[in-house]
Image (cartoon, rainbow, N blue to C red; front, top):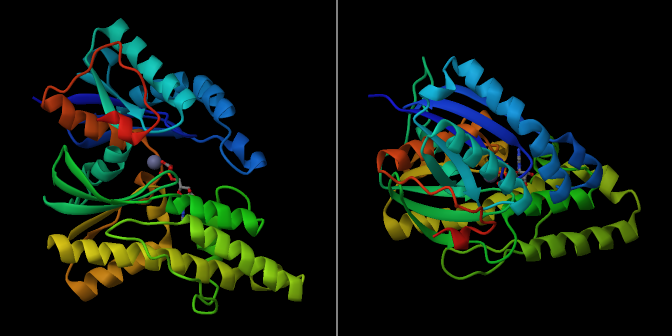
Length: 341
Ligand code: KG4
Ligand code: ZN
C-alpha cells in the first residue's frame, strides 16, 4: 500500500511543508524570510518568529495542494537537526502537536541526510533518475561541507568534512567583503559568469585526508582586497566580476580535488551533489565536466531541491517510516549534526 507522508522543514530561514505519496511529490510549499537581508545574515531570533508565523499556512497549503485529507497521512516527518535551535523548535513542536492531535506516527529526520536523499524524490511525468548504491554525495551548504559514502537509503558514512567553515559560508563572507549583500552565493554565481576565473590566484589549503578548510581562504581574500584597494580605491568596483569568478573557481577547485581523491580511494563512481551551494552554476558545470572526463555518473539536484525544502525531509521520513524508525513525542531538536547519532 502506498504511504502518504507529510514533511516539515524549519532548520534555518525557510519554512517548508511537503506531501509525498511514496516517493512521488504531491506538493512542496516554501516560505522564505526576506527579513534577514537587511542584516547581512540570518538572525536566529527573527528566523524563529517568522517560522511561527509561516508554519501553519505553509502546512495548510501543502496539504490542500496535495489534495489529501490530513487524517489520511501515514506519518509526519520533521527536521530534528542540525540547524538553528529556535527555528528547529518551531517545526518540531508543530510536528509533535499535529502527531498528537491526529494520532499519527512521528519521524525525525537529519537535515543533511535529507539533502542527500533529495535525489530520490520522484515527480510525475519526469525521468526521475537517481543514484545507485553505493554512491558518494558531495554535500555543500551554508553550514556543512562533507563527502558522504551512501551504501543504502539510511546508511551514511561521512568520509570527509570541513574542519572549520562551510563552503557556503566562504561564498557568503566573500560577498560581504565585496558588499554584495546576503545570501552571497547566488550573487557571486551571477557575477562570476561574466568574469575571468584565471585572473587572480589564491593559495590552496593543505588539509589531510578528505577533509576541507575554508577559513584561510576568507582571510587571504581579505588581505588581497586590502592590499589592492591601497593601490586603487576603486579596485573592487572595477574588478568585481573577475574577483567573483576567480574566488568561485578557487572554492570549486578545493571541492573537486577532494572529490576526485574520494573516488580514487573508494572506487565509487556514482556521484550526487546536494545542499544549498549545489545551485552554483560553476560547480554544476564542473561536476559534469569531471564526470564526463572521468567516467562518473553525476546527479545534480533540480534547483528547487537545492535549497532547504520539506520534500527531501518527507522522502527521508518515508524510508525511515518503512523501516519502523518512528520516534516518541518527547523528541527534542538538536543543533549539531554530531549530536544526532
Ligand atoms: O542548504 P542551504 O539552503 O542552508 C543550509 O542548510 O546551510 O544552503 C545555503 C547556502 C548559503 O551559504 C548560500 O549562499 C549558498 O547556499 N548558495 C549558493 C548558491 N545558492 C545558494 N552558493 C553558491 N552559488 C549559488 N548559486
Ligand atoms: Zn540545507
